Image (cartoon, rainbow, N blue to C red; front, top):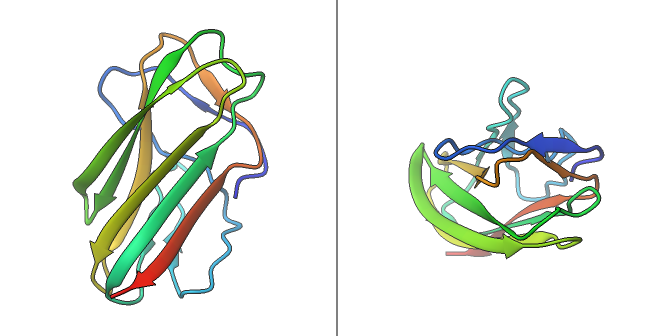
Amino acid sequence: MNNGAYNIAPSNSEFQGTDFSKKILDNIGLVHNYDATNYKHTFTVPQDGIYLIHAYMNFQQGVAKQLSLYAKLERNNVEQSRQSKLIGPYNGADFMFLNESNAGDKIRFTVLQNSGNVIQVSGGCRLNIIRMGK
C-alpha cells in the first residue's frame, strides 16, 4: 500500500515502476526488493504456486480526459501478461493477474500511459500478491 502521491509520466514505450511503498503487508514470505531509483520493485515468491496479483490505483483529482493505462506483469524479467484499462475523471484502475511461479521467481508490476500529460496516483493504492495454491 502506498501512503503518498507519485507520478506516472507519459511514455510511448517504457513501462514505469509503481510506488506501493516499503510498507507491504506480507503473510506468505515474499521478499520485497525495493528500488528507490525507478520503483521497478521485484517480489521474490517463497513457494511454487499460482499467485493472484492485484493492483488498485487511485488518481489524484481524477484525470482530465479519458486515457488508457497499461499494466504489465513480469516474471524473471520476462513479460507474462499485459492489460489495458480505460480510465476517466475520478476513476481508479484495477488490474488482476494470475501467474504460475516457482519458488525463487521474481515478479514485477509496471505501468505505461501515453496521454501526453503526467497523471498523479494518490495515496491508498494497493498491491496484493496472494498464493492461491498449486
